Length: 171
Image (tube, rainbow, N blue to C red; front, top):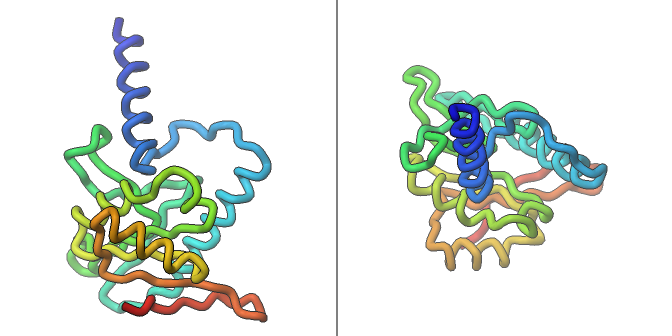
């Protein structure tokens, strides 16, 4: 009976967290080569953006598909936490200062990111969204429809020399 209960709780945990994009995988599922490439692209982008955040009072941590170690407590979720892409904590107190969600064209086209944005925006002091520059108009509309107001919407793109450039979106 306990094995059945454990399987049920794990399944419900995964289902609820999958909707929010916060699932910390218990094992790596089989992915197609294309899915794996998109996930790796996202993870590399998360790490590149994290290195660009230079606020002296903050420590920046990342959650990637390989390692989801930095959680934000959320008693309303069955798992009790969610895992944003970027977690910024105050250097001396350890309190959460901000979180960031990094989106690619693939993640914007996939499961609805608005649920993750909503949770992050209402549970953390500051919430930032990083999106491809080409998706600015679409993301602004999606944020408006979801009634989510991030502290910052940042647009990223790659220069002709393949350097990552980031700018704040205009009003």
